[in-house]
Image (cartoon, rainbow, N blue to C red; front, side, top):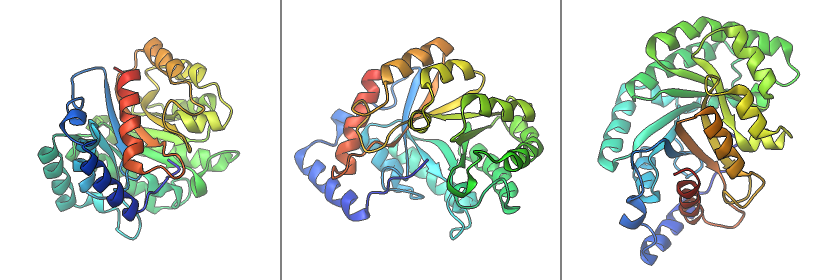
Length: 290
């Protein structure tokens, strides 16, 4: 969830170059949307389209199955809560043939769920947004100001708040996914305390690697019943060219019988245009997770 933000100028320049070179088009799009065990998406902030419905058309050009969409920020009053914005996303998805593959409350990095009273309503509203957009998983981010490491009081308050909203998530069939710097064992302590099958871990392989955790062992420790979704991420490298052993990740996913969305985040080398990077990232993911 730590964001890499290509500039709008970079996005437009890369788009023109790729279209001119014939690198974006039907040959890429044809791999998207095929029925299978995994759906490959990308975070809208990583493809330079944070909070923009244009992310759907770009996802089509990149050969993705869908987009993980930000709920918005304080300045936009979390605009995804607005019915007209939801309608615009549904229309953009239908026109492009890709899906809204997930929702992220990344605003919780700056406005912590563990302490700010506004966030309880935001998490509750995110469940309604998920239903309106036919989304199964809402990512709850716990980085920056929302970091839970070495914060027993903050963790206890998160447990209290998640316990209050969990019944609504269960009734609506929506999973709330905790993404944080915590280990698998620490995550398990929180979700076991909440005691709801609809509060799970949103597993980011790069974050866990950065913390020094054994990601394959953690995936198996958490298991299918405790992991709602994955981020496929590298910081400063293309997927498959950095620190993450994606073959080991795939084997661990096979062992726990995971099926569902894998959202690409980051994975843009310094100086390399976003669109070129994501064409390569999508090809890698299609080959590794076919």
